[in-house]
Image (cartoon, rainbow over all chains, first blue to last red; front, side):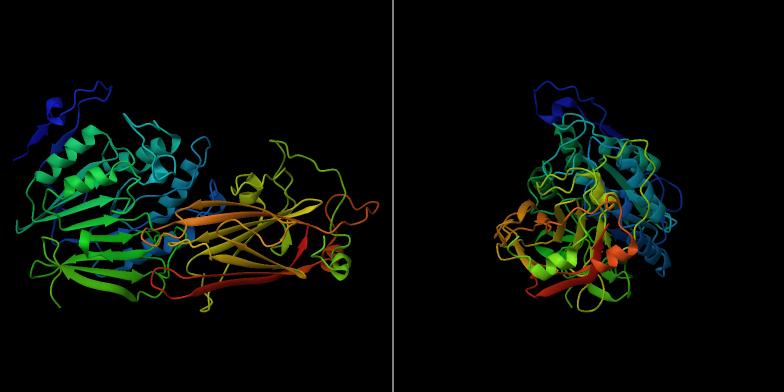
Length: 313
Length: 206
């Protein structure tokens, strides 16, 4: 069965006149094909990587893009046993001025590094994919419009996974039908009423596991979509919120959140660069493991239930 | 110039070229690659505004990443960049920092003089111009900050014009005028552990 729900404009609860096209929809089922692809797919098990921010320290500093670090991180993920079926990235792939020409070259470097991992990568949008400011808002209805950074992000990272918007949903299900999982990608820097309505509808779809991927953590509430999406998330079941923005790793259980921002951007805490692997266990819980990219040392490890609660040790 | 001793002036004699600065044209070939211990000429006017936005900061500057006690890249990340012109040494200091405090500071040793510059953008030398760009809040431990960048203009000692010294110096001139640079920064992230980074080298001016 394949269903599509077209959002009625009236459902948005707004009478304000905008030029936003009414084409948001939610596709409810996992694509019926093995492996991760555009829209999701059918998997033997749920085992995926989370990789964080990757950008240079200085604006337009393409010559010093952290290519070597990103290359190592993606090579590490490729070398994981078992190899994760797909990866999600938490945003910020560039540090480019909106009036310049460095967005595409930086994304080329990122994609070159990312090519070390062979499977699908689903990219959340960060504030640097708008103007760079945390409070920026791009896309239809956004005060910052369609910046070069935003357009290149959509063209080079989003279009190849078959999506057209910075917010989207990916569906996965077990080959044997024993579980389903949805990954809801929130674009807090391309926030508008249609994304809000879409998010509410997307999260209402029942699934065994629900992951929300948003660049900014709960505390970065100057991003236009953080507080509104946090309110919507609170109304629905959530397994885990995956964020970045802070160039570090952290686990904030109060928000069912892990912050994975240490994918190559300048580190602002004591943690080294690294990545996270989330793997389904035979009992239906999920094991979350944060790794150091150089040593493969386990930085943090815990397990959660499908409802996001911690598994008692 | 008070902070620079006579010996430092002697050390740096001949470092400052008095040649006419030429602005790079768009179709100029890229400048030759310098040795990693040479501070390049900026070639353009540098505005001290806390933004390392002039292209030479990315394409020409001497760039050094501070190392931690374990010999690896310091965590939190700290980076130094340097350029110069006839009269001024320009220093860019990048500090990744999840909890920016008024007391967070760099210690910069340039030849015989030592400059401290903190996360308010204050440098403790009256002849040093400083500007800061902070991405985060000062002294608010309840949130997470990102980084702060300081841009400094440090006067170079005056040097007499020497005929024929305009433009790039010879290797011998660079060696004769080289000076030590040490950059140090300690920070306390939210885990409460003090972590330090350091970089040291002997550098010359292009």
